[in-house]
Image (cartoon, rainbow, N blue to C red; front, side, top):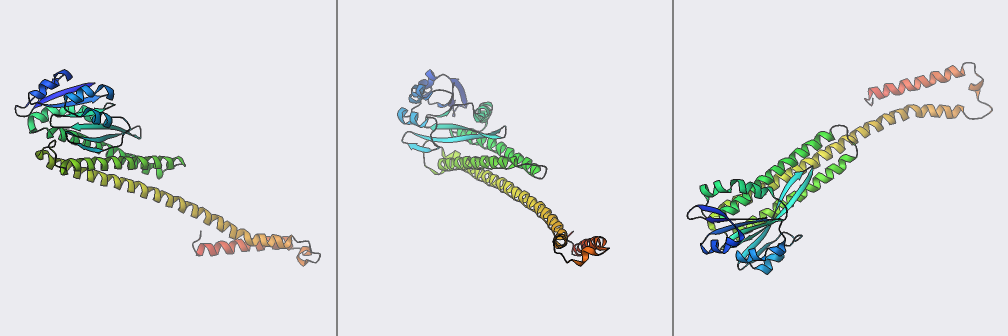
Length: 319
């Protein structure tokens, strides 16, 4: 699906156009925003050519599976941003490729993107109220992108809180897989945030006829916001790690208490085992064997040893 909107920033007018109307719109001095969703790259050269993008280079850049890049050409800029959302406990990443020149902005994404949906819902009001140059589209993109990142960050915060509640309850070894998966997703999301920050820094620091000077201060603020979000995400990761360490400490403490109890039992039975070993020997001359009160004396000795050991342990607060 291809959606095209032409903007007249001087007259504050905008209208939807078809791909066939692009040359007339550019000839009239209008600026075009092309949203390309789910189309094959092989079908895009006519649209790319009509918008003034170098067809061969840009077609290669839009191929799926390419790493995130910031590419500079004499006639355009290309960069990639990634939308990230939590879905069913897993991070869902959707790349969006941007082509920018003096005639327009083309956004290519193989799958539907919430970012684009939100822009379509709000761009008209923002266009009439605030726009002064094509930079307003970059503002719309970064603003909604960061809003989505905030929601994802809140989702990770909630996931970390849920893990904390589980760790302090009855858990099994499956919790470690959950923590590992959550940590992996947090690190992945952090890389996405930092990559987006670097892209926006490139847009603000690089001199380019395709990025208006009036939009650069706002984009710089967006880059700072992304830096703050990355720091907040690092904090969530540290909280998760500290919670897991605390849980492991609690497990170690419980194990230590159990071993302590087992040690106390061993201390009690050790002298009793010694007595049993002595009187279990098969020597011929053992006076106690023929003593009338030997059995009662044995149990008296046993009870005395147990009582003495228990008294010592209690006084030393081992029990």
